[in-house]
Amino acid sequence: MLKRVRRSIRVLSHLIDPEGGLRTWACTVRAYPRYVGEIRAYGALTRSEPLRLRDLCPKLRDRHPSTPFDAHYLYQEVWALREVWARRPAYHVDVGSRVAFVGALSVATNAICADIRPFTGDLQHLEPIAASAVSLSFRSNSVPSLSCLHVVEHIGLGRYGDPLDPEGTTKAMGELARVLAPQGHLYFSVPVGKPRTCFNAHRVLDPQQVLDWFQGLELVQLSAVTDGGLFLPEVEPASLRDCHYACGLYHLTRGCEG
Image 1 (cartoon, rainbow, N blue to C red):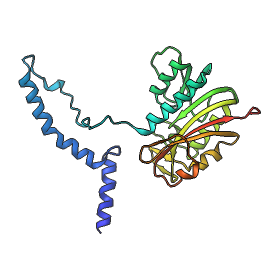
Image 2: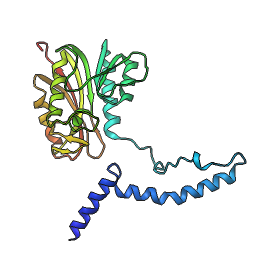
Image 3: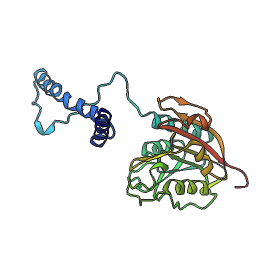
Image 4: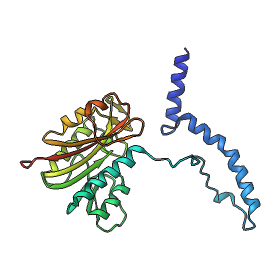
């Protein structure tokens, strides 16, 4: 009975706040008395116009002993940028990665960012195009430098407005392999560990199966971010199979014959 209650609480907390859980939600509620006290204290310290209720903008989750960061996204983007910078291609194509990453790419080279939700900003050396990851407009064997970071695990789950498709992840991986040029480089990341679908957030893939699905491509190096948030510059796929939610960073290439 106790196990059922605990499981129900975990499920409820996940549904209330999937990113932080019930504990984070409760901490936010408990922070409000402190916030009100600090409004009064700040008002006592200033002789300027008093704080107006309509201008208040409470931020209650930002007090941390060190700067918080998402290990998957920080390490994967530094990893990919380092690789692209080292090779300095004439241009680079990114499919669906974070816009901050493709913006940084545009400093290193001419960048094309293909996304189902196209970027609407204006940056020099960055060309945004509307595109589906399962139907890219590039010719086969044409893209010399290509990235897709923490994207394909979402394809087909409807989270970003894309059609529901149980095969969405494998279709997107097939498109990446199709457009990569001979001797081209693909920088690819995806959650790895015990395979499962966490609807509608993401999928987690078997690290070896990722390589099996990229038929025709060769692995240059596999790096990873562990469950504990550690970056490992070189690992074997088998070492990640028992992970819960690690990140596999795959540097792949196509042979000369394509």
